[in-house]
Length: 160
Figure 1: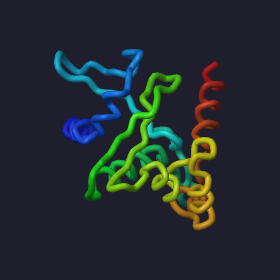
Figure 2: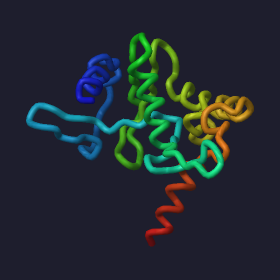
Figure 3: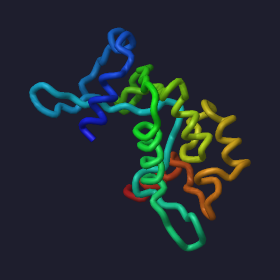
């Protein structure tokens, strides 16, 4: 995993990073004296949370958050081509919002079009409607996951 993160940072668009100013160290994780990790979030998508379940077939729960994670890892590690990560801005949780491209393909759009992520707001609504119509990914499940936003809200309310 450390090698994977290193490779991601190594082939990131250097010009975008030069112009990108982190105003808070909250998006950084200090690994050791000469290493840092950055918290990044793919802009325009929202995926099921790790531990969020859905039913692929009736009465058979699966971890949809884990399935989204596996799908993203597969796209990024098992396909050839240049990986480009373009920082856009910092979100309210101090994560770096990024656009990710693999060999010129928008990874956010690919995740949504495959039915493995939700469009955040209307960013990838066309791709989401396509996945729903074709019953791709979660949209083909017996019970797709509730939207990650609704899932997080329900968990917050449960713990109050």
